Length: 295
Ligand code: GDP
Ligand code: K
Ligand code: MG
Image 1: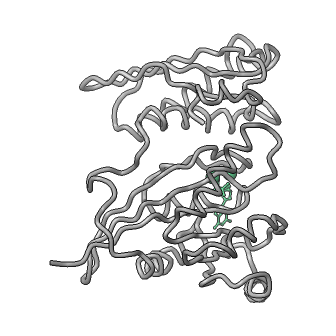
Image 2: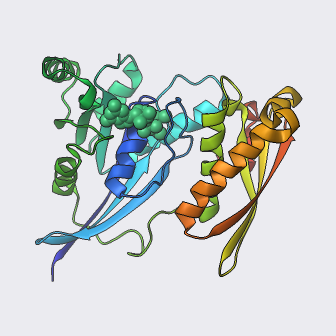
């Protein structure tokens, strides 16, 4: 019998460095929403890859995490707890950096220095960089701390991703699978439905509105050829509700159309989507309400 290897791989780093893009490349499905705005990923999201090499079978369990930021709201604190938890539980840690970012989160560097698992430091977005800048960045990181390895890649173009997979497999411990072999993720389908609506809100509105929104799926009813999904979008103030709606409800209608198209691709079925907007004053500041939203 072949050995089985399995482990948790945590993807951490600042906002917008390409963590979700990288995870989707590694997992091969669009599990994690990607936008050009910071803080799109609020939860820890797991993606599971099962496979085999000539020597062993394996299961990789990836966690994508919210970007590392200094907490301002209660919401941010629980987001950062996910990040710290990921550094502690990971069998392999992918610390993602952007070729042109300025890194100043000393506390996270400290946590990484104390981590006992291998740390692969990734310099992402090399498609944007000149070769001499890449070399300089490698030297910079070697001076800051000693990760187990440094790899350069372009998550967007997939360049360097197979090499990264090989290195992850190298560090994966011998262990039986953690999840049934036919599961792609630990999150229920309605989680993805909510994330797709949130993604479209991020893409359609400016400034603080997307950060003030939370999406809850209140019904998810699947029949042979159709999924009926009802959603509630929570905002903090009635002025935000008005912005979200737009003139005659046209802006939220556009969000709904785009989210539905995304859901139909993801679930492979026709989707009927309802959206209701509700005002819940200061939900981001209140722990009880956040717990109700699953944080
Ligand atoms: P996250 O906040 O770290 O999860 O970052 P995302 O995966 O959401 O990506 C943030 C932005 O960077 C998006 O616009 C991505 O398309 C872009 N991006 C990610 N990886 C690359 C890359 O390798 N090259 C370039 N040019 N852009 C990238
Ligand atoms: K992002
Ligand atoms: Mg992300």
